[in-house]
Image (cartoon, rainbow, N blue to C red; front, side):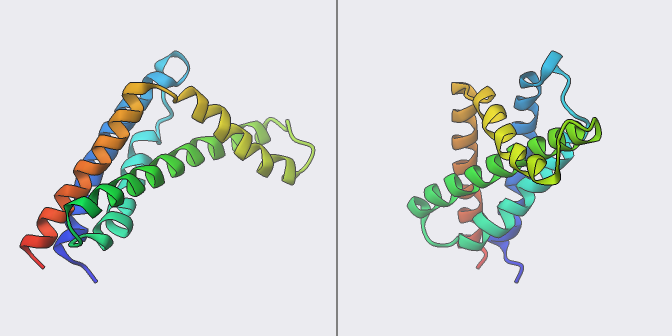
Amino acid sequence: MPTAGRLAGAIAYALYGWYIASLLIPFFPEGVAPGYLIPATITIAVVCGWKIVGARANRGYYAAIGHGLTGAFALSFWVIFLVSFQRMIRKSLRRLYDGPMEGVVDIFAQMLEFGQELLDVNLIVSVAVGGVIGAWVAEYYAKRYP
């Protein structure tokens, strides 16, 4: 059921996803990110803002901190998974795997590798603070327009 909290969460997280995608660009080789990164990150952020943050809005501002961190973690997980999946597909097209299970297992190895590359204080703080701010925006509109 569409509510003002869900809509506000989706819009706030769309802006947040765009910002996070722009922060991720320098972490790719030669600063050239894949072409799908910004649209995919925004799409994932909208879904997280709608389903995770917006669905839990109108429970208070302290609870919104937890909802925002949950949404930020979910966004981070799915973006890292998407990039790792794309890397696995690229490697599989070069026939670097002996079988399909090796490729599936390598997705998670790629996730660990890419996640370690993203261990940057500025990025982690931006993800956490942006997630909480997006949740507070959703909370504000959920309380004002129930």
